[in-house]
Image (cartoon, rainbow, N blue to C red):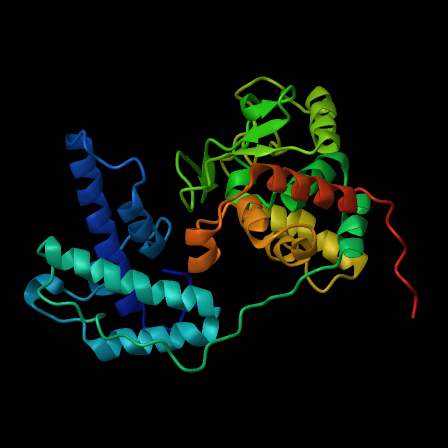
Length: 336
């Protein structure tokens, strides 16, 4: 469950769902340890961990006592969801609704509760719109021209290959093949931990690198702190809050320490990782299936997924075109 400001939602309801998630996660991990048939993609723990609060210890009065027969009523969960809708984006509210339904279904199967009070949860009518801010090619060029060496190569890779942050910061030199000009994603990061799976089936993949980008990565390898095969391509630069120096970068830290400062410096409306921007701009550089292949999405829509097949050469040409746009000489913004 997403973190919310204290006093804005019913903590007892939120903590009860998080508590159920904690108990069920432990049960799932115990079953997985005892079974050799556990799926490679642990989808169930993803749901549980999304509902847990990091490091939270639940006291007896923090949760609804399910063992004494006290029930979590539909209106309690609906009120909680309505409160979340005033604080969080539409996407996160929809995730919260899905997770609450899923957690109670599993709790029924495990014998913790007798019924699912979240079954009839409805989405609040007033949902905050999703921020769909996108940048122009010239704004992206200005960002790259203003970034330090490590960040310029990192952001170029993000913009060209549209890696998710969880994929980008887990990249290791062992996955870089200069001869074939490819880069392999073999792990992802999540809340300070490494995972051997990603958000979708296509998260762990090997991507084509435009020649110029492959050369830049090769030069960065000569200058980076540790070019050994198991080292991260973009390591953190300092030891802080238990993080190991030259370990992987935390996404939230990178947003605040690098992206936010660049956005203020260049007076951009917003600067984040550029999956949405590139998906929008790349429409003129390749067809829908090419862009879907670059983004690593499972499907664009039913028609594209079922009837259109990805043409690998088309994906490579689209990547080359994106890289050519990004590495052009930036033009100064017009002064009004």
